Length: 96
Image (cartoon, rainbow, N blue to C red; front, side):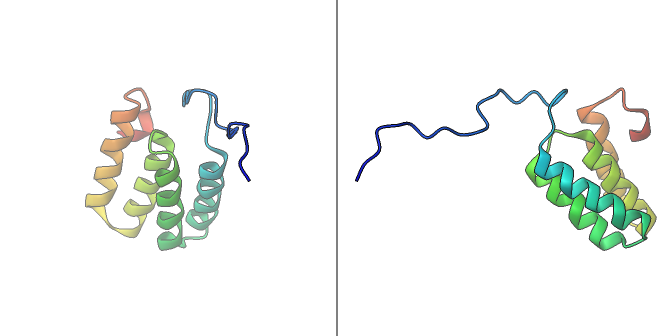
């Protein structure tokens, strides 16, 4: 049987990332924050990576992952993420 109604997706709004965040990505960020506070750095990095994969335009996900990499002693990845952070938001002081 065929349906004549078009598929109505919930993401019909334009993506304006300055005011709108991806709720699924935010969940991953929150989980990452908990892992980071518990010093579970690998899990934190994985959570922030999942958030980035869902919304690669949010500078906070890169900033948080950069902090986790730095805490883990991975300076190169921390620097790469810091550079991504400031590329997305040059006014975000924690990126520097």
